[in-house]
Length: 162
Image (cartoon, rainbow, N blue to C red; front, side, top):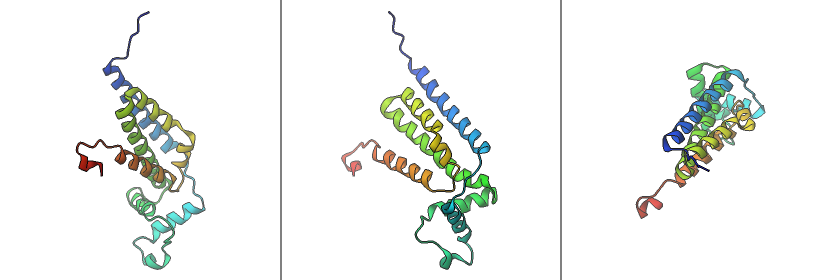
């Protein structure tokens, strides 16, 4: 029996095809699925409205994280006050987190494993659903992935370990 291993160029092709697939899937679900706004989502949208207004210090909710309302404010400025602006914030963070996980898995397990990990993450129904909510869950997952990526950076010198 002859074993035909996948050559390096084919592994790279598989990885790049996965990148294209998850990007196209991201675009498809971003424009086709609706936005969902919970009670917390209304609070975040209101906090975005409070930023830069005369209501700022007195109506600001200090129990909430400030980065999500700030990114919502920027999305409202860029896309207008519409559902796509809310979806753009969460969905972009979800796609970026998927790319970072793919990069990490590629470094430690190879292109095929990275392609599989990214496709599974992109198709995970809970992740897709949360990318359409006006909530901070996808942003939290993104920052956890970012922290993991920072912790797994290779250290060339002993000083970089710290």
